[in-house]
Structure formats: C-alpha cells, structure tokens
Image (cartoon, rainbow, N blue to C red):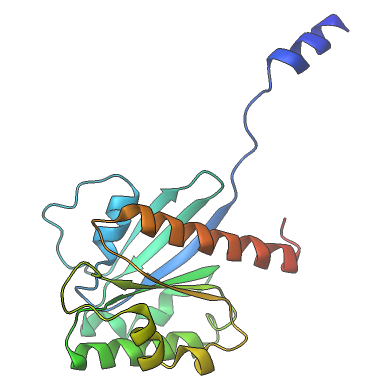
Length: 192
C-alpha cells in the first residue's frame, strides 16, 4: 500500500499519448508549403526547392502530432492530388498572397475544387495566405472576398490566416486552431 501511495505522489508515469491527425497540404508551387512545414519542424529552410511528388512530415505540437502529407504544386503534379486525399482528417491550403493575379486565380480554382471534393468537403480546412511580409501581399480580408470563402465554405469548418516564414509563432497559432477543429470533429464522430 505504501508503494502505491509513493507511486501516486511521486511518479506520475508517462504522459498520455498525443492524438495524431493525418493532414494533406496543398497549394501552388512557390506558395511556401515546404518552408512553413520545415520551420514548424525546426528544420533549416536554406536550399528548399519545389516539391516533386510529395513529402511527409510529423509536426509535433503540445496537444497533438500532425502527420502532414505535402503535395507538390506543379501543374504536372496537381492532377494527381486527389489520389492522396484518402485518409486525410484535415486540409492545409497554402497560397501566395503576393502572387500575380493569374496565379491567384489558379489558387482560387484549386481551393474551390478542394473544398468541394467528396473526400475533403467535410474536413476542417486551414487556409494560409502566405508571404504576408511582402509589399504586394493581399490582406486576409481581400483574400476572403476574392476567393468567395463566405458563401463557398458556409457550413464547413475553416480558418483563414495570414502567414510568413519569418513569423512562425503566428503559423503555430493557426495550426493550433486547426487542431481544435480536428478535436471537435473527433468528438462529433466519437473517435475520442
């Protein structure tokens, strides 16, 4: 009995396992997907090139681990994105808020397609308007209006935040909000 009392008071044991969530991260080439994920993992961002195919990173947070499958954004790869959606529990869409009007229109089309895809349409979305540190960056309000997010994403769980590789704390806060949406979805589906 004394041992149990000692163990209870002094040895809390291992912490409970953190839940793991499988995410898909999409966006056009040059939007900053790899750089943001590398910074979240405390990896160097020097010599980062466009992702060919896909890469997977385990991004640890205090209350969860996010297994992020980042898909390359080149035209030759985008057509295969939907083959990697299965099993995803959430979506991160990264766009270059300082891109040309033509690229922004392409990003808008891809986001609309993702929001309406049968395997993604019920999942929580984190939309990062990246490169907010550039002079030509559009505000999140401008992005929300241009992308017509209010009517398109009505009834869906989504977050739109500005981001920059140089302000990783803001990116971490955005991902923490996504984790909260994932936890709510888990509770609704009875996973937890």
